[in-house]
Length: 274
Image 1 (cartoon, rainbow, N blue to C red):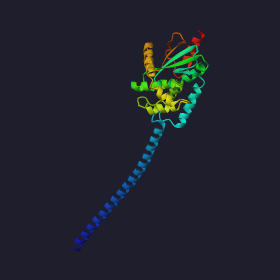
Image 2 (cartoon, rainbow, N blue to C red):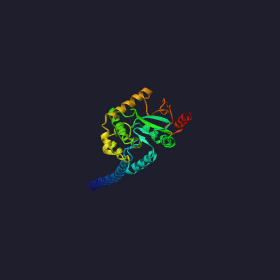
Image 3 (cartoon, rainbow, N blue to C red):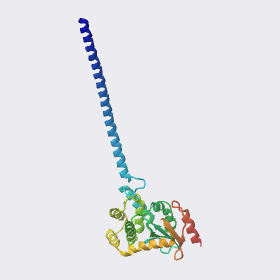
Image 4 (tube, helix red, strand yellow):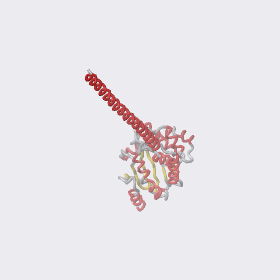
């Protein structure tokens, strides 16, 4: 009898030990799980902080290497200073930059939203202006040709805004500012607020007069006339150029480098020598 009881006690003891071991294993598993959850929570916080930091950086830089609309006030000031230095002291008349008696004329067809035009603005153009326009040998006439802008009404509005600045002989300040702060193509960045902010960066521009002048039908007609002139020349892309002696026949300037001025230099030198 006692042997049977002993066996029963042993069995109960074994079950208790087994249960104790199972409970310990469960507790260890739960403890390990708690540690994992704690680590994951910390990791999640770190990831969240990193994501927030990345978002802040993207917002501060415009979200893209091609987006220039989220420009800081310091950058805008630097842009304004650079543009003023580039064109200050050079005569402007409407859409023309340079002396009215300059012997050579370069007609430049552009779309203010065209990223390739921006490449030209930041590349070859400053050297051309410094070497030829500032010295009175070349004048540049800016004309409108819709290529990159997807909405015709937006195109007309932005180009007319530039022409309205030209009514105060500030068009080149406006278009240079536009190209420097150009936004990402097809992003819809050209709004009334954007155009107003550009105008505010043009030194000496009378904003009230600029706003009134934008409603003049003659400016919209000029945009349409420019498009027709581009079509007559066979241009379908921007930037495109005509060049020749002032007052004479102009010809296409074929495939000049947009980042180096050498192609423009060679043609201008040829015309001056001729």
